[in-house]
Image (cartoon, rainbow, N blue to C red; front, side, top):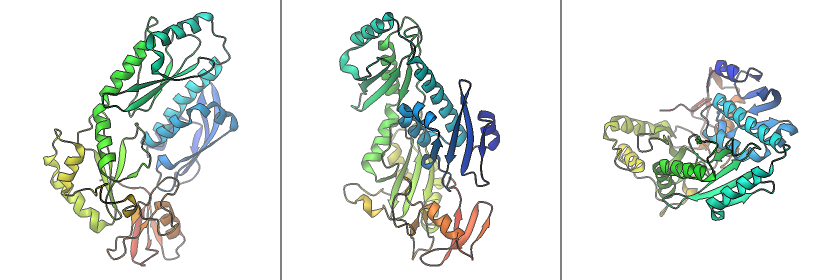
Length: 373
């Protein structure tokens, strides 16, 4: 998690509410207006499972941007980055809300309709009744379907529309007053092709392995938690700009299982070959075959938490495992943390809590956040 100093610089009115750093409350400022907001993080501090609470007024302003906010929660590495994204989205939402009350001149509609006719109505997926929001569809060279949402202000075409896309990187539009929707669409197509290799890598992972998280990955998602065996998995974070390079990896599972995998990865790093697929490289370096989707079912790896008896908890799968080889029971980090906190015999040192496994009573250690390899 980024430091408190960085968060204070970005949002000086947004303050932590506890020592654990799981609750933040205050105000986010956009266009000179302050909006009350509260963000609650789970005990593992994973932003993707955060809960956002705000006033009905702010909720109404951000209503059309909920899917964008959800994507940002999954893609932003820390709370500071998310707050920067939230302020940007709020600025756009406020501007578009204000623009709705500005009467459009006849030239606005004639220019926009002309641009749509030149582009082709077959590329239009949605148009709102006020011609202020348009969604265009496109297909990349591999047949994947994509959408770009355009939100227009009253000064179009002098000013470009805001473009919302499901990309793992920023989509910045180059615009001149004489440009049209065709220019935006062509830039969108070029951006799709620039991300082709990244999506090829992610599609191969999704198609040939059992992905435990995210459950329904978006095109902007850069991480995959891949099942290796029962209660053992590896989380990979792929660089969208260099998808065939070694990704960031960390292993989840009992130490006696994941430690040999860490050792193999470190010993075989020099064997990484950017000319072959990321998935094949991981197989070669770890000296394993990932469980096949054709032979096994996801239920073979999706084991329920031993405390709450559910697989999903606020969207998260169990990510903690008892280290005893004879037990190996999985738990959600939040469930295990609460369980250990309630034990009279447990003790805590900084972000590490020591206790006993709820199943086998063997010594168990839990860190409040997962450390990367």
